[in-house]
Length: 476
Ligand code: SF4
Ligand code: SF4
Image 1 (cartoon, rainbow, N blue to C red):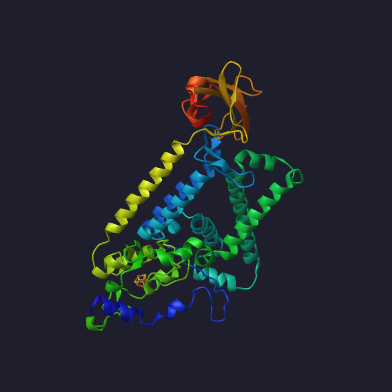
Image 2: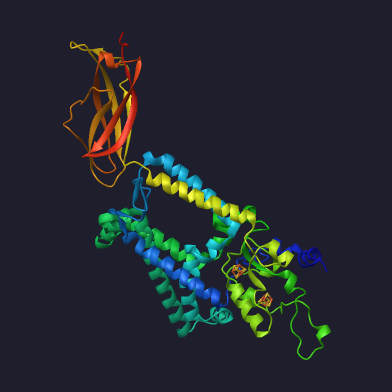
């Protein structure tokens, strides 16, 4: 039988695509009771979880140059990424960063599928590594938990359910506080905790809302976030292709599937490696059967790989009936290797990250716009010099106060700031407007628009160089 025949025979009944594993015929939610998977992939995911939680919890406490690692304060329009302070004035850099980010996501998904969802997405990490294990501990695993839910209310059931929800609320509160720390900063969160709710009502309401959302997501919504709500999940349909690395069932090797019949002659046994034990379905947190092919609901959590490898070991067959591979490699029966397209995408991804990093590193601490004051031409003085009046708008994008000094570099002349001492004080994140004169000897005015170069200094350090023009009568 050819590869195409196996595929067509296996998927000729596409019924599974017309329904969701978590919704019954009447449109009611089917509650999932996934069985706990064990194996090398789970162990690796546990390590990834430790790394994620370490970064997530310590992130708001880590300071770079006095600024947090990451802060997205939408209320005050202050954004800090890797200790770099971004203001609304950085919208070009921010916009470019967003475009690079979207491109990065698209290219990453085309090459590596939903690997992010299974290993590092906070939704999966919290659900599968914290909330689900707590539930399994108190209410049992898989089917035992279903029986526990269906059983009548007893003292044992009441205290277990109560304790579970107390722990769930405690974790939701903790996650809400950490999330707030990434929005308003850890200092503001500490202040919020130390005050009574009435002293900072909006902050307190924010914490309660976040706690409620997290509690609802991890207690009720669960896999529905990945299946129906998350926009990234919905994008999979257009991004994944035949070369994408994903968790996949090797239907060439597995079909025709069938249970092993004890003491039956070999010719009556199913010929494929899949023993139809359905363990891969039982462990799936989104309730799908990976043997139906790549599906939007699969979050690449690898639970089915661990479950199936365990079965394969028991029936003395090679592991990897479900594995990380591409459709192309499964169909050709060859080990998965990076396609040229995936390599090209990885190179582009690296370049994009490099470009954004260079843009951030090269970003100046101050942004200045200099324009001649509207309606003013030039003035000639009694000494025979020519003056132009300018307006400068300065924004301090650094984390420190800057004492700006303006110096005329080219051509030789004089620069005088109106109503300011030797330097202009510019606190972090603040914007200031100043008016200044440039006075040139007549012979320095070489055209109607003579090029002038102004340098901005903070103490002895040159922080910005600006080029503008000087308007005046051309010297004869
Ligand atoms: S099919 Fe496998 S990898 Fe995909 S979500 Fe289900 S268990 Fe996880
Ligand atoms: S766990 Fe493996 S052997 Fe069992 S049904 Fe799934 S694919 Fe087949």
